[in-house]
Image (tube, rainbow, N blue to C red):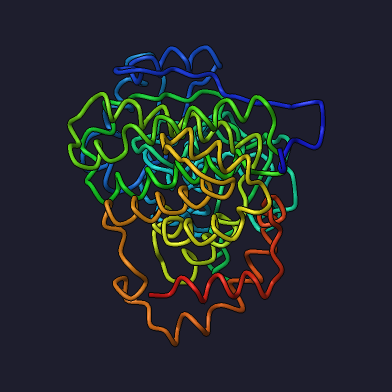
Length: 391
């Protein structure tokens, strides 16, 4: 296929996985097996208030551990939040870090775990740097179905000085244990369900068409697409649908596993600067870009995009270009079905958008993700794609 793996040797990394309803009850035993005694539990104000963080802390305490809760993470993980969490880790003598929540608390936990041992500032670890060690053990307890951060060797942190969303990569950021408990996602509101679900789908598709794809990552990516195709709209319509929620939790995990080992591509490269500049949720930024970027990229890997369409359950008859066109149409339909707002709806003006395009283009290229795309874009093409999605 057009974007086939470039090496015959595939390296694949995974955390230990505890998966299923009630999996959270195994966190104490999992932590004890790693010799952990004083974990820092990193979460956000919402999970501190709704009782989830307290429940996880109680489970750890019941297993003889002494957890400390840090609940000052922010929706787009920032260097200032990491610094505050690092102080909490040092003050408590933390010997591990546990992220509880969506992708933001888990990404923050990863950064704290690294700096607690390796020191320095997060900008020193941004791509293309690969960080292989020097972090406290990380455990991850996701409460959303989308980021897949519980299974990845990446974290994304916004530099408060430059407002750049920095992609930081390497095995140092891979959790030792991921606790994937669908019961923690049942109260997700529809907008969050939609945005995180599209994030999972983007991870899966980009991992599959990535120039770094492997046969193993392909298996996880295709299965993730199939699960999203059968369940995202159901979970969005009925948050209490346990089957749909379970499928989306697995889809997020599988897609995260896929892109952790095959990387993401142009959608994510362009999405991060949108979040940094305009404060738009990551999954929503992906959704705004996904159809247009896919249309741009089709010629670079037509057979792979056809396989994506098939995995999503899109039935196509016709010429060789039909599956790709049908995939783009399905992404547009999905955005409409999930009520994805426009940039104008989100309060972005045409003037502010146009002014931001040069910097966003530079940041997208600097992340390295566009170079994984089946059709590698030039800077003017990225700028044109940004301009084209404004509505």
